[in-house]
Length: 232
Image (tube, rainbow, N blue to C red; front, side):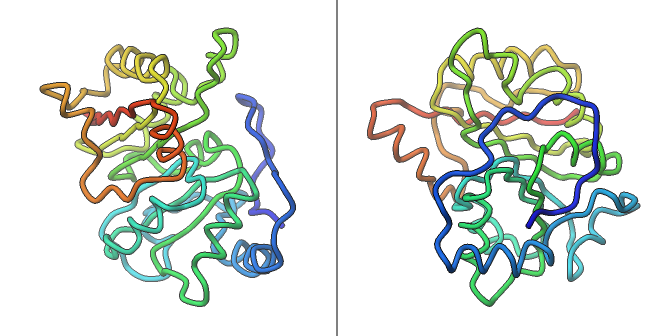
């Protein structure tokens, strides 16, 4: 069971699609809720992205690769007037989020279970107030760096769909990816780095719930960085 998405000739998706076998409750939630919440990219994109949600919202944000959904669930609860689109191609991550919703499905949530680049190409111009990319796959081997999600093509996509003043947040515990993101974003004409001191990027975001990936990084002695960029 997957959300509908069009065939497209574009960047390849390199991440894993599936892990261990889903528990019965996770499988049930996936089959019940993904058709209801999943975006269908075969449909024309909305003129107003806020119309995608089951009730009126004031703004829309995107989280790419939400993992187990810890951060996304927290944001849904604390920002009920904002609509959230969560992208996660990894079946187990999507199932974990949907099973955590239980019977009370937030009216300000939509999801997409495939390549985020396809969704970004589908969304209308200047429709998002924020994009979160938190602990993405770092592709640590230098020969694989070109697979990292942050790059010229995707920053161009971000710039198109983000409103002026919108926020792009990036968190990682991998120094080479942090430096990579800083270099790419500072070289891009659409983004300004919001930081005045080291503490600005060492301090977690306001209301940050932590994630299991972050907890693992801290256990293993890696210090995360929290970068914030503003769309000009």
